[in-house]
Image (cartoon, rainbow, N blue to C red; front, side):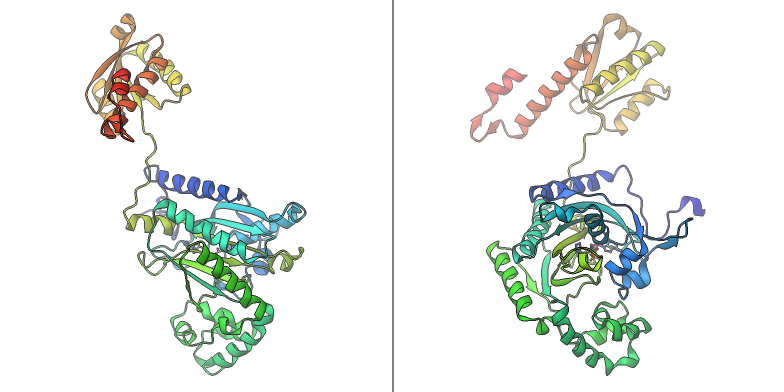
Length: 450
Ligand code: HAM
């Protein structure tokens, strides 16, 4: 296939027939986050490369291998965001939001870019929904954001996700841990990949999430951070667990979770599925108490998570979860002749102004072809407008499901069609409820409506 008609490797189109799923997910996630007080933030797609080097960390896979980095025409090094936390933290500092009431709570839906090896559930351009809570040190905050992710999954009806949590301590506890890790990996130094060899001195924890199969194998028996955390970090972790227990949120402690980004401290967590293949982590997050200081701001303990909407949709599909389809076409007005075409343009405009989704012919098709089109787009009602209908001032509306028709005056068509559609829909709803709602017989009410 010619290169101009092929999307770049690792990217994907979301076609009009599918996009309602993304729209529904995005709105649902933002709405649920809104209930927790998170408000949407929109940050640029690209940032100064240094932000990610400092924020995400020089020795991470993301920074070392996966960033889309280029010099712009002004000679600045620019990087397409590989994730949303660094940009949100930068915006918090740049706009002095640390002077506002804390915690500041952001949520976002954004596209991210990582030059990874594409496979099922892993793309080079992918979308994340995420939240960041800046300026909250207490364990209650950790439990609150976990419960937010949990609520999103519950609302969507997603089942079987395992919540795994761990504590990776603070820089103080990490000193001893790094020593233990260096000792452990030193013994098998010759087998490590060149990147991990470099990490051994600078940041041995990063070896634990290297994607190379050999490093992975070696890392399996490495010491676990949870055995090295200090008293304060341990107390924090115990308290997070207590909150989760109290909120009936099930979890397992997985001492192997270290997360792939350097800013994390203390609590880290992932929601993992076994139903979508190797890329089963649908959501990941944790605390980053030192990030804002690292970027030159005041000490601001913070935390957040992000979930990949692509992976979430894959999981929902695997579980057969249907999302509500948006309204297609309420009414298609087919036309015969030039005069009818002008009239239909005005009628459809009136209908749309009243909130009805209305379409008419704009390509000059035959009546038969117009009706075929109306059928294809799933129009709920159709009407045929020609010189006779214009002369009589009457339009016959047909319900495409039942085949029933109803004559309505052209002069106030928009209003009378809206009323008619509402009546029909209410009656259909009554029937689908079996003529009863909460034990009340609806026949009298529905009789009136009909
Ligand atoms: P992350 O674990 O790198 O964390 O990514 C979060 C989620 O984004 C993953 O669990 C996954 O669902 C999705 N994801 C990551 N990479 C890809 C990819 N190549 N293709 C498809 N989906 C992907 C972060 O990005 C942190 N910023 C999360 C966070 C927010 N921590 C604190 N606040």
